Image (cartoon, rainbow, N blue to C red; front, side, top):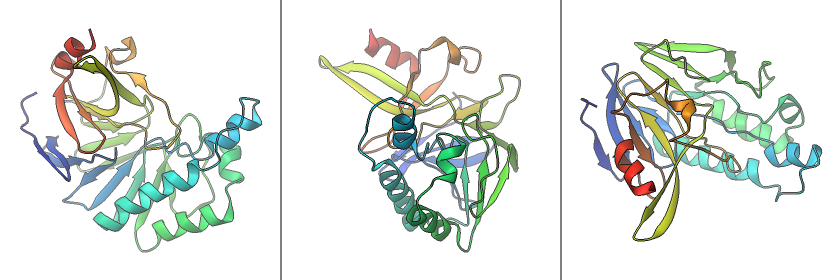
Length: 234
C-alpha cells in the first residue's frame, strides 16, 4: 500500500480516501476529524441465542463485556457520532429480548450524540433503541456498509470477522484484525463471543489485492503485510 501509517499506543493511524483513520487496539475504528467511532459485529445476545437454539450454555456475560468495552472507547474518545456496522444483535429476537439494564446502557451511549445502526444479515429489521437504522452511510468520500461490495471502493465494512493465525518462535498466535488496502477496510468483530474467519480464506480474494495489510488487535494495534503473515502461518 502507498499510504504511510503510524503505530502508537493509541492505535494505528493511516489514510483511506484521503481520510485519516485510527485503527484501535480494541478493534474499534476512530475518525478524528469527524469525531466518529465505528464498531462492527457486536452480536449482542449471542449467548442467549446459542442456548435458545440448543447449542449449550455459555456464560451469560457477553452483553455486559461487549458494552463495557464500547463504553471504555466512548469514555476515552468522547465521539460526536457512533456507528455500528451491522450484526449488532445475533438475531432480531436478541434485540427484542435485551435486558432493561442493557437498554439503559445503550441509551446512555447514544445520549447527546448521533447513533447509527447499519443493518446486517443477522439484524435486518430496525430496532427500537435510540438512534437511526440505515443500510449504508456515506461520510465524505467513504461509504459504510455491513458487507463489502467488490465493485465499490472507499468503503468500510464488517461481516467477515477477520482474524490472523500465525506462528512466532513456534507458538501459535491468533488475533482479530482489520484488513485493508487502498480501496477498502474490513473491521474485526467487536463482540465478546464472536469467532473469526481466517484472512487467507478465499472469500477475501475478490476484495483485496496482493498489497493488503492486516492491523492486529490486542495490547496494541500492529500493522503487518498480509504476505508476511502468510509466511509466518506456514
